[in-house]
Length: 121
Image (cartoon, rainbow, N blue to C red):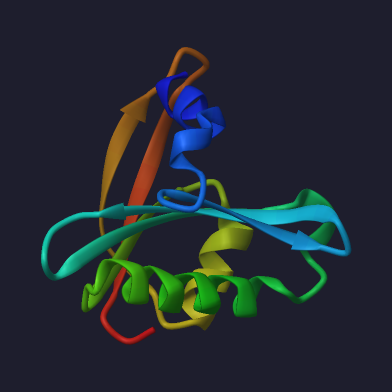
């Protein structure tokens, strides 16, 4: 809930959250969290109507490049639920690799989370 409130807080727009529009409609978003001098964390979401139609690879690659430029980091990391196989496939296509996993308990269920990281976006 805290992340959702942060996302809708206009003071974070264009500093931590970035909206991507396509012909006036929301196409997706990026969330950027500077981690340290060498690591930046990226969160992203692509509009459901666009998934499975090919833009995911360019969307993730562009998001990684943008994150590296904004944070001046050399490494980008993100986290993805193990059941989100479609996203994992896209991440692997752009060169992201899983380096570990953990378990996250939510009110609805327990979810295994993969930590994915890259050095070459």
